[in-house]
Structure formats: structure tokens, C-alpha cells
Image (tube, rainbow, N blue to C red; front, side, top):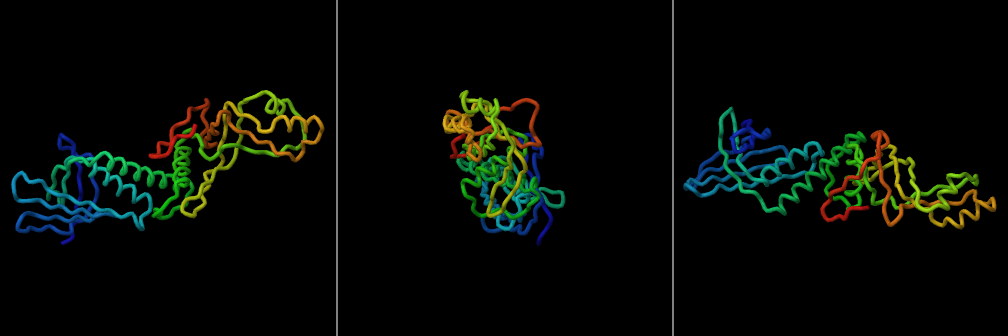
Length: 278
């Protein structure tokens, strides 16, 4: 009996706040009430509505992100968030209300998990689109990959990000002396900036974001006295210069194509269970 349908979410004034296309696959009646099965892209909703007045209906919404691209998975998880948040909904077919009801909100832990999962898939979709590399939602992701994915998405959005991975930057001296180099070696923390490429690996895929600007207002040189002595002796060519932010901080990153006119403030990664880098 498959019929085109839609699941509609309503506000307190009975106005639609969201709707999703669906297929009504079963509409039946038993000894204690009605049952409704609705197929959704990537998910399935089963609703049991008792005939007894005042007895609450029960709803089961199951979803599976297997074999879905992130763009499709985002909608599946958005609907999951809608169900978890609670409120009134309807199932409509042929322009008529088939069934519906009011759902209680799920516990805060469930809502937070739904939010974090939705954010992950949304980040993945954004990065795939930027890199023009499309693949299915990975079933597993290492913590480091998740952190890099969040940072990449924020960079694409034009934000400044504190990278938890960039503790220092290195270059090789060519032996030439300069006032700028002397200042770095001898004058304590100094503003530093440069350009490098940003790439991340997600589920075995190498994704290139493009050039990023790295910077920090107070960077220090490692092993400054030894490098200064080598410059004085004319023996600095080929030596390695390492720069790191002062006080255990990390370098800030900006996508080069999104650099604003003034230096921006970093935004938090906002990942559950992960301490913000500084």
C-alpha cells in the first residue's frame, strides 16, 4: 500500500516548522489501536496509537547512515534531532492528516549526542564539498581525524582556529644574516606568520584544503643562542630554525583565501570531551 507521504513538525501555533518526504508503507488497526509504518530516506518510523483515551502513543524512529553520503545523512540526523527534541508532528498523505501526536523531549544526554553526530556529518559534508571529494559516511573515525575535520570545516567557514596539532614550525637557514632573523633569535617572543598547506586524512582519504596562514603574536625560537653563535661564525647555512608559540600555546590558522582585513579572534572547536587548545 505504499503511498507518498510527508512527516511534518509543528510549533505551538500548529504551523509547520519542517517537513520531510516519506512513504506510508503500512496503516493498520489491531485489537488495542492503530499502527503506522513510514519509510524515510535512511530511516523508518513506527507509530503505535492506542484506542484508550489518555494513553500515550509510542514512536520508534530508527535510522542507518550506512551507504549514505553526508549530504543525505545530514537530513536523516536533522529529523532524528527533531524527534529527540519532542513536540507535535503529523504524518500526511494526499493532503490529509493520517496520524500524529505530541512527543516528550528525550533526556539531555540523548539530545547532546544527536547534536554532536549531526555536527560531525555536517562538517564532513562541508569539507567534501570544498575539496570536491565525495564518499560515504565512514563507520568509524579516529579522534584525531574528528578534531582535524572540525578545524577544517571552521577554516572553510572563514574562522580563525587554534590548531591542536601545530606545536612548532621549522625552516632551514641559508646562512644569510638579517635584522629580522636577529630579532627572532635574540629579542624574546615576537609576532610570527607564514603560509603552509593544510591537509587532513579522513577514513584513508587525503583531503587538501589549500594554503593556510599560520601565525602567533608571541613566538619564541628554540636553541636561539646556538643559532646566533653559528651566524656570528658564518656557519649557519643548513641549520634548522624551530619556532613555537610562547607559554605552551599553539599556532593560529586561517585559510589564505578567507583572510580578513584585521586579525580575528580564534573560535572554539566545541567538541564534546576534547579540551580546547590555547
